[in-house]
Image (cartoon, rainbow, N blue to C red; front, side, top):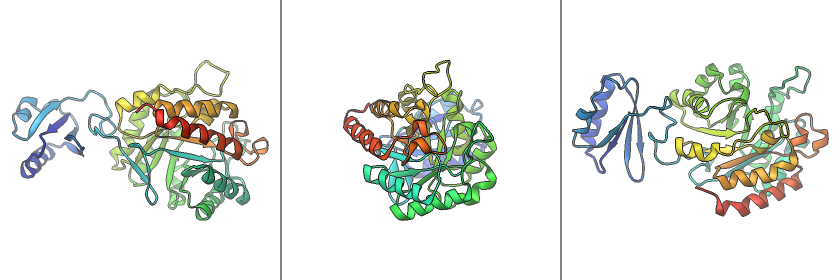
Length: 335
């Protein structure tokens, strides 16, 4: 249920209403927007009499919310959320960011070189896998702790905030200096992991599962937000369909759909979605035009010899070309 308060509602009366609702066992999510203030109730509101609440002097209107996700729901939070990363970098609410770097951290020379090149081309954050979930147990699994150390070294060299994926709750202490923790597609419904991340206050980049609906995706975001961490960024990375021409099927319709359903920032990963480097540029441009808040793009100094996902990785020169196209499209993006 959401309660729309009148402009300039008396603060004492608002506090009294909050205390009454809390005494009945409801959690309250307050959203103070530019045009209106919304009080969102989380819990079983079937026993609440809407007419009684509507009769209060400070209340403009009351609506029941049918969607199972509450904190992530735009009805609870009319304005776009802005997630702050590091010192002053923002994603969402008109702040567009590109996250770029290799699929896997391989060597110090590789990650520092790529970090410098993507920053020079306009990327705002550095991505790189230290822990890699791979379909085959014989494939490269990442450098683990050493990979995080090298990412932080690249961060020190360039100033770029770091985004990397967590695989296990037990690894969380290693992520203390990581700026954005990524939850990969395979862990989107690892609810115990999501609960623990909800207890942190670090930004969480939540990728869509391989075959999950948008509602299931938003419910995973709800797990994080229910723990008190509102710093969630959604990442569309393609879903599994019958099509085999691309690695996955990039669901660009998810961007405007999510804009209607949620206030959370949405970024798009055209690299994992298509699996082919030559398709990254047109899909990055299309995602930008659709209104995404950012992009996540894989860049490698030597794609043919990459230890993972070389086929979808751009060279630094190709990334510069993509950035030029994206910057040309941005003024015409749907918002």
